[in-house]
Length: 59
Image 1 (cartoon, rainbow, N blue to C red):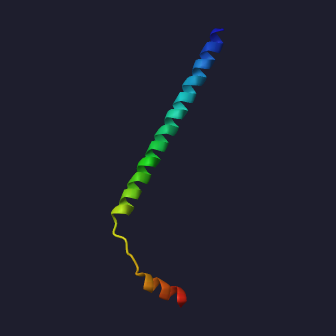
Image 2: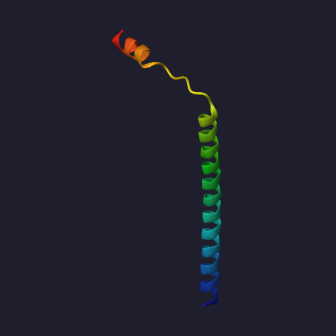
Image 3: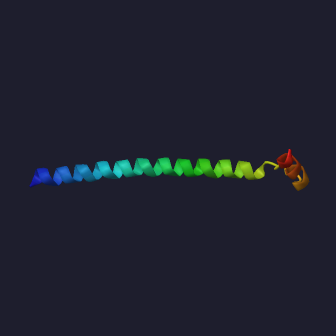
């Protein structure tokens, strides 16, 4: 019985550790995406007039 308890505890501990690692990876990815999104939003966009775009399509 004692071995079963320790094996269960060990399995739960390993699962918690893996989930913690995955959560940290996800949090890092979210932070990276938020940073890149904010950088993209702060950069000035070059807006091309509609007439120029239509002329390019026609050519």
